[in-house]
Image (cartoon, rainbow, N blue to C red; front, side, top):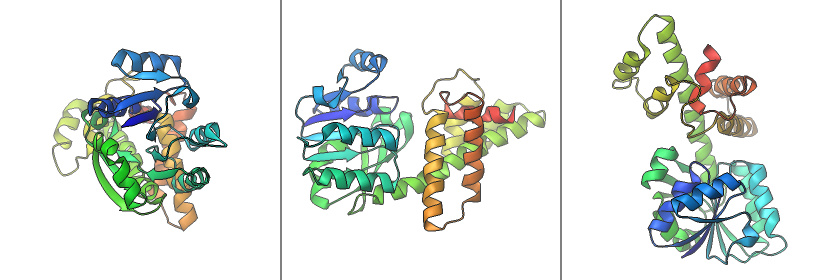
Length: 281
């Protein structure tokens, strides 16, 4: 299939590469000149805007924020050439429903398909994809989705995928902060943090986030960025917003969100999300 992939960041580029490796024709759209250079070096043709991309059968969107998704939709008004858009960003149920309605007026069918698994699983094509939308639409884009991971249909309307991703990001937000607090506690107790991480991550207290983020928490501020603090400021904020709207109590999420905001205030927004540990230092 001919695919336009919008957003070639840390997770978007490996996703696009896996689509291409599956035999599809991929053109990337990336605003950042450095991002376009990285894509070209990896073997993906990239342009600066959607208007410069050739006609495609599927548009995949992997931007960072609700505002960016709205801007992408704005860029195709008053008409869109592609029948199917797949929104894989974490933007919240309200945003994806609003933008899906705008695109539907242009004859575009949206599949709401956020992912979980991070950069590590994006690179191996093992993402979990929460696909929501009409069954024929999911079937139409499945050759592209299958190239990136395991597709789990979760509902027949836009917003259902985002709602599940809200629950997912609640746990991710809390788990990262809990891991940081625990490793900070280990240091305060005078323990070898690396030994503690090795032992605890193998037992009942282990978690995927502890095993993945824990080592980077011990590497220092300049560790590799796979997901920035700023992303979790946004994601935990989306969870808090969704919780308020449905009347759910989320005190643990609220505490985690405060930690990401504190890290942002300390100038760590562009650093890896594991650096939330610095709010204990």
